[in-house]
Structure formats: C-alpha cells, structure tokens
Picture 1 (cartoon, rainbow, N blue to C red):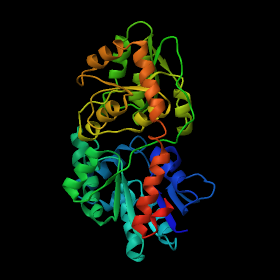
Picture 2 (picture 1 turned 180 degrees about the vertical axis):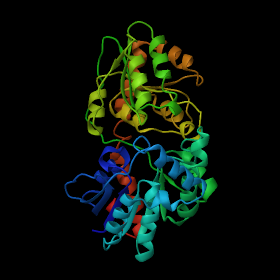
Picture 3 (picture 1 turned 45 degrees about the vertical axis):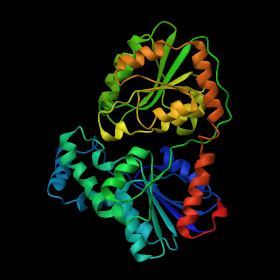
Picture 4 (picture 1 turned 135 degrees about the vertical axis):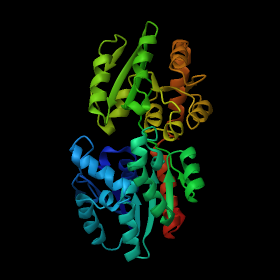
Length: 386
C-alpha cells in the first residue's frame, strides 16, 4: 500500500471532512495524519502539534502585531508560527509519502516544500471555502487576514496536483481566478441505518455554527413566528463567545425554542433523527454564504429529516431533485417562516420518506468510491482499487 499524509491545521477528528476522509481511506493506504492536538487514531500514524493562540486568546498588542504584519505583507510571520514549525519538522522527516492531502490552506506551503524535496510525491488540497472572501463583510479582515489568504492562494494554489471543493459555485470561482479545476466532493456523512421518526407535533432542528456573518439571530425571529404546535430545537456553537452568550440569553426567553447541549460529531445524526425538519437560514450576504453547501444539509438527510432552506443556488437543485423539502420564495426570514407554517403533516411525512430513500446515495459510501478513484488516478494506480 502507498503512503498518504493528511494535514490539518486543527484537530482532524472534530472536523467532518478530514474525519470522514480518514475513515474512507483506512485499509486502502498507510495513513499519516498531522493535526493540532491530534488524538491517537487506531491503525493510523498520527503527529500532533500544539495550537496557536486564537483571536480571543491574543493580547491587543499581539493582535496588532499580526495586523501590522499583514499590512506590511510580512506573511511569513503568520505562516511560519512556532507550532507550525513543529509540524514542518515532523512532516519533512517523514519518508516515502506518495500523496499529501491538505485540509487547511495554511498548511499548503509545507506540503509543497515536502514535494520539492520528494519529486514523486503529489499534493491534493480540499477547498472548503473561497478563502480570500471568507469574512468579506469585515473591511478590517479583508485588508489584513484576507490579504494573507489571497497571498496563499496566489502563491501556492497553482502548484497543486489536484483540488477538491465543497460546492460548484466555489469550485467555479477558483477556476475563474486561479485557473485550477477543482473536483466537486460533497460533504457526505457516513450511512446510518435509521428510519424516519414519528412525532405528535412538528419538531424543527438547527445544528451548527452561529455567527454575526451568518445573521444567526434570524433563528430567533423564526422561532417567534412559528404557529402553535411547532418547536425549534437548537444545537449551537460559535467562534464568538459573547455572540453565543447573547444568543442563548435571548433564546431562553422564547417558549418555542429548546436548546440542547453540543454533540460529538458521531452523535449528531442519531440524536437529530428524533426531529422532523432541518433548517438552513443562510442569506446571500457574501460569496461563501451564497454558494454554501454545508455539512448539516447532508446530515439532516442522513438523519431522515426533511429540509427547509433559503433558496441557495447549491441547495435548491438538490432539494427539488430528491423531493426532500422546500425552499422559501426569497431570502426574507418572513418567507421561511410562512413556508414552515404552511406545511401539512403529509408534506412532512413525504419529505422524510424521500430523505430515507436517498440516504444511501448521499453518504460516504458514494464519496469513498469517488476519492479512491481520484487518488488511484493521481498516483497512477489501477482504478479497480476503487
């Protein structure tokens, strides 16, 4: 078996795409996983490096130094941090890697340096966002960290051998700007042998990150507008502690909301199977939000839930193709509320039944075939491995 490294600038087992990628490749390749605070993974050689300070942990002086480095285009200060230098030493001392899969673009330069010293090695990157516009509504971010991510894309992306991407819209943007042609690789979860639940009243669920740029307070507006007999369940996380605290404080005053404690990645689908409809509320207030095709969409389906969503261009065709839910007529929160309130019991049963039917297709079983084929092709192996 050939050797594959997976590089993550986070704990790979807490992030859906790298965690599922590891599972899909186990048994087919010798795996080497490099990640921040990476735990031991049975059957995998793991290399853990320490985390760097988050924005919340940095002092005002440290934050200003990073911003100044961005303004001066001294990007090495952001890239070659002490913790990543530990990763670099571990990676460059690992012999015989045939493929390096980069899950975070901040680690792409290290993978390409390995390739420079090991010419037969290939580099693949998984593009989960269009990074130069990740927080495009924040002018301060655009001129600082946005410039850093643009530098990473401008300098290193053209050197990759293959790229994966989460949605067609984001893939097209990378092709347009950087002349690379990413392969669409959906964020599909493992197949779960579940059946649709039966409830006496309508149970909605939203799980995942909330933030100002996602306009997540619209979830509270939805809850306030629900007709009698409908409840909104929430499992929320945030990279903004004060935002999360304020959100939960207001949510607790709304009787149609029930807040649940955060779940581990592998617990989300079985836990949410008890509900009826998953909710997606993103608005086109930025490039990445407009073209999002989030993990939760496929996790809702695997949990045998129908999906209620705003009319995002990547999500709408899938909802309509598989008959698993409905999209609102526009992006107004009031339109999504009206849509939910208009549903009949038969609508909900129909959506959940269709989610059940399509769940094997929209699972890692299909993604595994695709990634094994792509890797075999890239490494010049026989495709019957897949």
